[in-house]
Length: 501
Image (cartoon, rainbow, N blue to C red):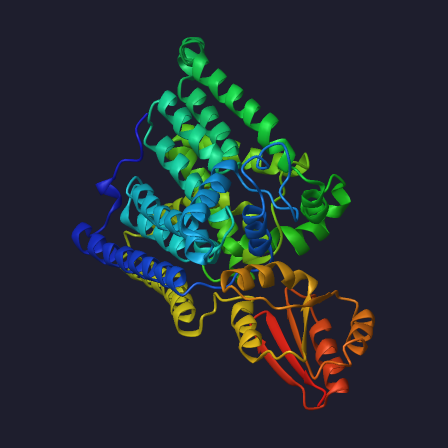
């Protein structure tokens, strides 16, 4: 069965419309590439999970990679771990090494999005799909994040594109085996696509299964060995404890609260500007898109529906959760981006095909793409480059400040969640800074401060700390001890200097 073929009958003024939409796509892709390059060159600091994962890689031997979980409740695909550790051994520790694979994957995602868009049936749908991808703050954020989620998104796009292009099942499974090593969620996408292949060949099902049985068996054996020797050791209890309340509930009475407080917020990472008011529109277009997909290509409809079923089923069975609110919280669902964006774009294209014969509606549709999707996307990209809004937990600059101004009679106190980032950056800069660790209990922290009475200066560094009012309480405590205390704040981190001279 062939991929979507361009349907010239669906286009209005072919030359003019395609030219306008091509310009929008090129503009969006160019802006997205530039923003990702900027984020990679002027990268952010490591935040809590990234610092923990870096510690896991730098302090784990090659022999310890297998048969044991990584420290600090971290879990990453084997290929990602081996790749990063190899680069670390060759080039040493720095963010350019850590962010390299996610960065390259993000550029690959944009390329695959363009390739998928060319299989869609009209230029409006193609442009809509590209704008959804380029406007995704989730995909943008994880383009320079030392975690596997951006790579999962890239491989989700890759497997979907390969299926749309109808490559042979044997080639698809071979590529899937490699993808699974770098993305555990690729197994879910692969299963959905295999169902699609079976649907394509339902008229000669016995022959199809007989011919391709060795490939099915290879996939099962490969995943079985991979699970036994690696994945099951990474399934640490802390993961399920943290995400427990974000699995779909089994009690039907809990669903109204779950949908209101959890489920809807997961969609924020897929929206072009992470605002909840667009979620109903997005969900409506997705439903229309599923209907349109059923009319256009039933095997792909079955594949997408299977993927959605697997997505829901994994959460119900407490195997893999959706995530939680926002861009960072919804990272576990990022591998579904390609499918969500596809059905949403098809929904928009289906509606457009029924109103485009009226000139004013064609103009309004183009303006909607520009105003609702393109301009907010450009605004976000400009904000990243002008205000460094992608920077979080900027501990490195504070650590350098401590190192340059530290004297023998000073004490350094580091919040417990900041310790891994502190260890990484002091090692990176070859610094030796003695420090003590404090936790979120400010009463204990106050006692610790009393034990530092012999120190002329006390440096307090905290990032990844609890939500308000903890930060203000820490500041008030410092000012009570030294009313002239110097307090430096940045996005997500704080440095306090107390003087006892």
